[in-house]
Image (cartoon, rainbow, N blue to C red; front, side, top):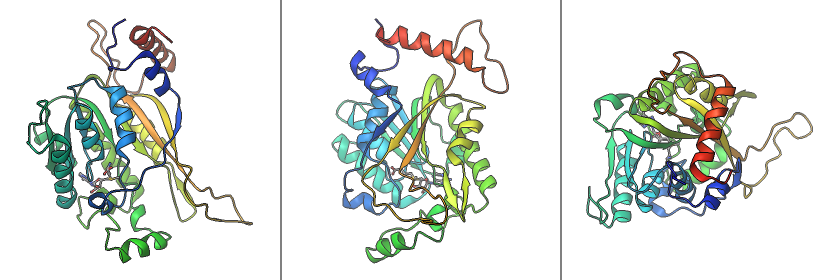
Length: 303
Ligand SMILES: C[S@@+](CC[C@H](N)C(=O)[O-])C[C@H]1O[C@@H](n2cnc3c(N)ncnc32)[C@H](O)[C@@H]1O
């Protein structure tokens, strides 16, 4: 049976379909410790191997120190990243070079690994060719600057590590109004969607955030707003179970120790001759469900 999505065996396909997983990130290397919030390469690799085939191209429009890009070239994909902070962009490029075996932009298998230091809002001007998959994680609003991060701040300060991404006005981690932050972020994703090839998937790794006793449902808001121009498929929930519990609100109020992230999966509708996509909001769930069933049966024959 032809598998249009990836190079996995039916068994590995099925294993990835579980809607949650536990991943405790391994300790970080020196070069990437500087960055305050990166996700693990091992996690990226599982997503990339599910959503692409060898030789396809992965984009991270807010690449940080390049976890998604390093994972991509490490498993035989091409990688393109955009990152605002020149320091992180340089680290990402060096890490890709090391992974590729130092010949840039071409590695031994003809793989391309490129990091563009730029504002992701300028994506349309960056001449990036159509990409096959997007794996990314935004700043979690301005949470790195909030009060309550003091313990972590002290630890990072003592070790001379960054406490937030930058002081750049264009850095979305510096926008203090939630609605404004959300609007700017969604606009970046809209530009990303324009350079995805039809049928390509995008995974956004994100958390809901709490500030001053209020929950801001960043993950759910992105599901709804990005779902206006990409089809929201469903989430995988990434759980961490190696973090110390803190007695937030004990005896007084329910406040969770949040140890999960949402990996929100979206898809740009495939081109179907003679079936123009309805404009406006997403298709009704029944239609989306039919398409999923078709793709699963067609791709693996096992579900
Ligand atoms: C959560 S971090 C990404 C971490 C990355 N996934 C990793 O594992 O290293 C978000 C990144 O977005 C970058 N960023 C913020 N505003 C940006 C913008 N307007 N354009 C491009 N990058 C931006 C920050 O500098 C930060 O590195």
